[in-house]
Amino acid sequence: MYPVATKRCNCCPSYMLLHICICLLVVGLSSGMTPPRPGDIASHTATAIPREEKKPPPPKSANKGRHEVDFIINSGKPMARSLQEDEEEVQQSIQTVLVVSADGHPDHFPTVQAAVDAVPMWNYLRWIIYIKSGTYVGTVFIPEGKDYITLLGEGADSTVLTFNRKACDKRPDGTKFTILDCPSVIVEASYFTAKDITFENSSPKPADLDYDSQAPAIRISGDNCAFYNCNFLGWQDTLYADQGKHYYVGCHIEGNVDFILGYARAVFESCTIYSRGEGFITAQSRWCKDDCPGTADSAFVILRSNVTGYRLAEYNSTGTGLTYLGRPWREFAKVVFIDTTMGEHIAPEGWVDWLTDTGPLFSHNSVYFAEFGSTGPGANASARADWSHQLSDEEAEAYRDVTGFLEADTWLEAPPSLEDLMKANLLQDESWGRAVALEGHNSKKFPPRRWKNLSAKDQTTP
Ligand SMILES: *[C@@H]1O[C@H](CO)[C@@H](O)[C@H](O)[C@H]1NC(C)=O
Ligand SMILES: *[C@@H]1O[C@H](CO)[C@@H](O)[C@H](O)[C@H]1NC(C)=O
Ligand SMILES: *[C@@H]1O[C@H](CO)[C@@H](O)[C@H](O)[C@H]1NC(C)=O
Ligand SMILES: *[C@@H]1O[C@H](CO)[C@@H](O)[C@H](O)[C@H]1NC(C)=O
Image (cartoon, rainbow, N blue to C red; front, side, top):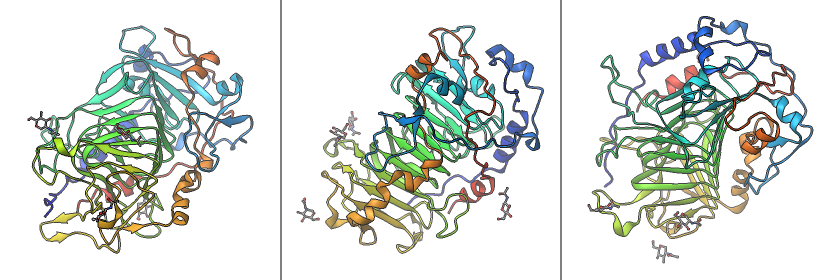
């Protein structure tokens, strides 16, 4: 019998108030001015931009002069993610490069948060926050409305954003954090991308059967977000793909319990999914069957990935010693593994119920867990839960079409590489990035989506 899961932390209403306060305090900077410097931030904090004053969306630009980027691994249909052909176009699509470093350089921001604070609200040009190698200890919060931010590191193993807060740790006022506000990094903005960065929650491993120590490295609640070559490190609930459409490619995701969780419509392509100990890989939380507000087709698709982790022979903790592909956090949880290698640590049943003291919480008919093309020692389908699905090659095809599945042709593009920024003269070593400030030109803006209601509902615990 599998251990009974205890209840999760509830969403705390005071978190919402905190969030609103932060939004109201956020700085506005008009486009066309020189880039903000670290010391400038304080002088701008007095001006809050009310929501009504946000700029009208500029017309959508045509995809001219674009080409496929080699970095993209997807071997399915051609994708829209691409970089501009020449320097001029790179400049036109990027507003500003801000540099973060830990080396005390006067032109660099000392923390990622300080750089984020300098990006204007309701921005619609891409801002690159270039984070030099180093371990940055602290939280980062990117609020809704600070769209089009890219965090670009110097390498996933050398640029590390880390903190160590758990849900159920105490805030200074004595109340408890929740899974919503304890992550090391929180992204509520849309069109966010990150490349070559480690996101970590360094809280220690929870005790066996302690299911109340959620410690996400990141929560992403924005729409149309993409992660390239990033590491996500933690134990329980490492990668909280809360809501919106997300694409993760070439990433390394580590944890033990429910370490890819949430309600997003997300594709994880060519990723390494590494179990640090027994538990559950996914805890998907699709909570309505049709007409889901916010994210219709909420589902996790793990595509052409490597599900690996601890060696069974060395496993000497209590419990079953096995890891499940997933358990349903919500009634209509949907997870599909396509063309993926699975290690010996995967339980033969593959999938397991969300258990409570009174039995399984959800019906096998409402939950949808499926596989196609699994290989490796954990792939044997003969003992899989009889309520899970083995797809046909034709059925799997819909999930291999990443562009179609994520409606990505309207939003997905690769973040510029360091080399591109240098070439376009946007970044010189040891120097401050310079603004190109071509107002409204060649930028994309789609209507913002409102998630607040959904978040609150989604966090109601079973
Ligand atoms: C999966 O990852 C493990 C651990 O890093 C590695 O030993 C193995 O070769 C990988 N398998 C594939 C198919 O890439
Ligand atoms: C097994 O126990 C040994 C000794 O306590 C420890 O060093 C090792 O990391 C454990 N292995 C696992 C997979 O937990
Ligand atoms: C798959 O598992 C079944 C029993 O669960 C076993 O009889 C069969 O030999 C296994 N197949 C492979 C290829 O390991
Ligand atoms: C919140 O939900 C209610 C009822 O579903 C809806 O009428 C309202 O528009 C929503 N508000 C926002 C901000 O999404």
